[in-house]
Length: 484
Image (cartoon, rainbow, N blue to C red; front, side):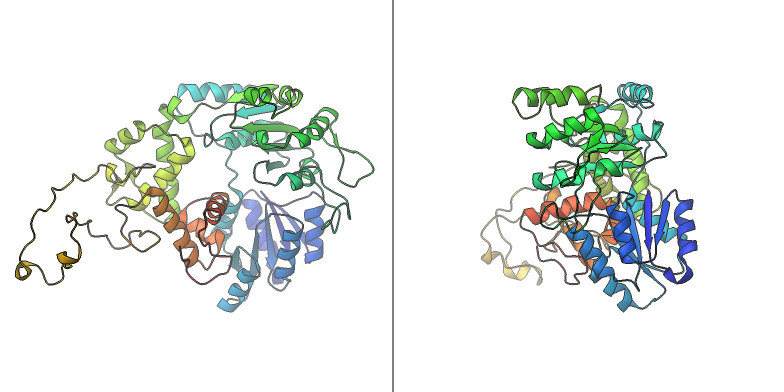
């Protein structure tokens, strides 16, 4: 975790930096926005920027956005009035941290942003075999291709490899090749000189140079445009890159890891991936089995996520009972570990009592389990005088009456239209929960992610999906509730 502090923080910089370093962060400090932008452009990089509110937060965020530097920004200041915090959030900060710094608050923000847990949770012998091979190859500098279905934990395994390598003390830099447009990915990887193209206002160091000495992860490399693959192949072979607009090659020393959820051999056969690049990347192939192929991991992962989300939501520790575990172990898990994590997040929020039972297990595409038995249709209506005064008029609805949904307990979640959970799809419930929470937090992504118990990255991916589907998503700092 790399933390960049911009500004003096009115004398509290030493305390804030020490707290961050105690939590494992590497801290850099610059006095102003210009110094901060220089650090970000020159490849020293940061996973989080902490800026003094007396600096121009808006200018920093605007410059970072213009130069496609997607590092989260949090604002800090001794001012405790709400207006200062709101102004910082409206300027583009993801969070506001009051000073003097609170150790637990800074730790929570660092954890929400970084999420750099190198541990791999497993119990099944099949996964144990994969980890044993990973331990063998981790100390080498050979390229590794990590393959597996979406949601199996490919990036987690890549971080595990880095943590076990001789480069563990150096940077781990990740690039999602599927998330960056083709016309920008080349600059993101190799950097550019000032004036290389419209918008290149200053020299920018690319991810290859930023990862120099450490590990570079090319996530979902199969989505990279085939024309860029040739330049990537040269960079891997020669261990040097050319910045856009540059006149001299730049030597780099990296360990390369790539991931893909596709069958790359078929991708090569279809002409969508260069064969020479495939063989260059595939020195070692670590294939992560699907969760349904390692059933021994389901219980231990479910318990891990239950503990995580109980703590994240401030709930007392609760364990899964035998029925809930059996229900989880019988599911197919098309979404793998990611689907299991989401299921346990829902279960923690829905569970009542001292344990998590089967009634709280809401699987993807299904309702709450077990389902309530259907009631027979009502074939006759009571006389008006026999009906309770509060009951709706049956004459206005000639359809057979449906069984009433159970009363919603206090504090339970409603969907995005304010209705009951029963009868709604899991996707609709999840969407409503996320957007309502974000609206409650005035658009503050970091705070909403902490409340929801999910990572910032997961929240952003969900919000992008909802926006693409046409739903209104609160902008950072937006106070109005979303209208879905």
